[in-house]
Amino acid sequence: MMKPNNGEAPKCANTNEASSLSVSTKELTMNSLAKSNANNTQTSAISQFHFDTHAVRVLSIHNEPWFVAADLCRVLELSNPTKSIMNLDDDEKALTSIQGLSRGNEEANIVSESGMYTLILRCRDAVKPGTIPHRVRKWVTAEVLPAIRKTGSYDSPRKATKKALPGKITIEQQEAVKQLVMNRGKALPKENQAKAMITMWSALKTHFGCSYKEISEDQFTEALSLAARVTIEGEFLGKQEALPVPKLEVSLPIQWWFDNNPAVKYGNRENITKMKQNHFCFTPSLNVTIDMLCGDSDTSAAIQLINIMEMAGYDVSAPKAEIVAMRKHIANVEYGMKAISDACIRAKNKKVIFRGKKADITIN
Image 1 (cartoon, rainbow, N blue to C red):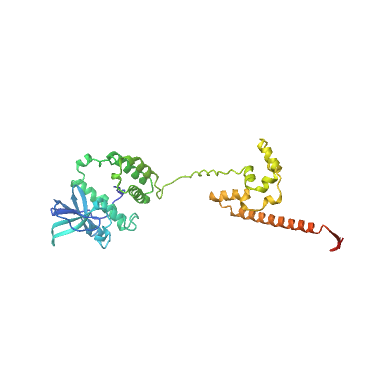
Image 2: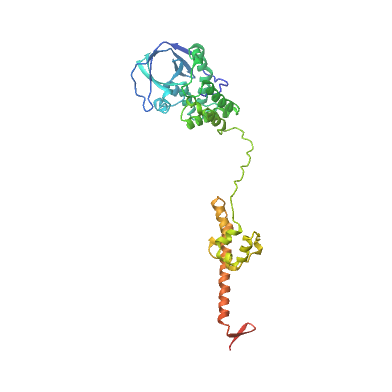
């Protein structure tokens, strides 16, 4: 679990009192805070710490600190403790019975150290210096937890012999992931550190669907890679090298025009014969007539090239519009030339004499 940078502790009362109240702890379910059978009873001392004018009770259960949710939410100015802890993970919340309070046997919601950090960091401006959530986080890390570790059994030596879960990353691998996250965070300006670490831990949990300690052993390298490449605010990325432009595969040899434009093929029969005899045919040497430059778009090599570029994601609408317009005008010119030719044929028995701007037609 990530722990924020301690830094300078806020000026809050650091008095703590210990009592020997009886504590009965029961785990909560994901969907409710319903009570479970009271089979798991443990007696634990309750330490009481003071933040400004508020008291926060902390229990030591199984050598781990647990915070009374109502006290913590009161300090954080969260009006509904039950609602506030509903979205915590199952292992971050519990229901406990505390005997010896003023109203007798009272049940209270408690949250683990991880749950405490989650509650704080979900508050608005949790990483902004001077705000109440920020001051509470600094107070807990600078005063509360050190006091528990010093006087209680929170840092029991047996934690060093803790074993990893079967099939999950080892303790050493867990530490490697943790150190990577911590080192990347600490390399940033102080005001960006906590937010960056939260971003990295969240990315790991979202990607693998579990805490970093539960990542499969064969995914260790992937976890390191993910933690190392997560984009975090405040980190200098340096100048990014331009990505190589993908190569556009285009092949439109002169043979394509012969194969797809019957007029070109028919008008260049001799050139095609030379090509079959391994004589290269240059474009200027082709016999190109006006009817070869119009007609269906499927016969145009230029239109085919533009279509290929469009399918590759290029915006070539301007040259396409120009080519289509040119082919249309060429078609109109061809139509006009044929009309003139037909008129001349029909008038072959007529004698046309032009005089100035008028034409006198004499029929033979």
